[in-house]
Image (cartoon, rainbow, N blue to C red; front, side):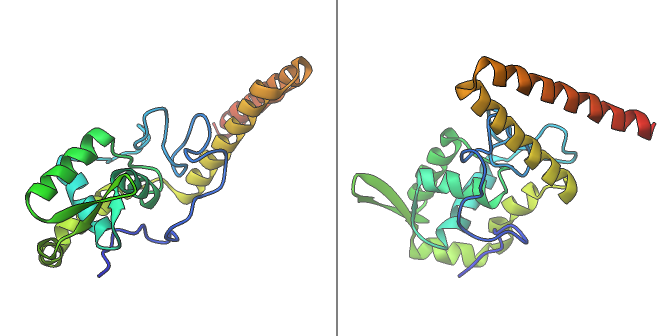
Length: 196
């Protein structure tokens, strides 16, 4: 049985391109893991913070597809929310324990990893509580425009290129990169000035 937890218009599975899983050193909306702590960007209006029940419902939604361990659940929530929601282990593992205690999921050891799957009671619960199970994705749907999202993606990839220069570039390359970024910043402010 499938839920509606998949992001509309996003392909399931697979990693997006770019520098690293979290979308570069600085991260932007639409690039997995915004900022140093993950989560949605602060300037997106109307964003509500994920509640404890959201994590619980998201876990149930994901386990309807296949068994997963805690780390896989965190990754999949981040992936399906387009990087806008990455719950911490401190939120996911207590929720897994609570669901296990309630008999809605079952845990099994597999090659040293603890994997969780829905129990029969859990599947019956999901069938009877579709609105609750689908709520986390609806609460995390971004209202950032697609063109703005693409702009932030470009900025994130630019940040990744800067980090490559910082790590491996010569003094001359670092100096040239500084000039390029300074000129780019001036031109961006020029755009704002022209608009005014």
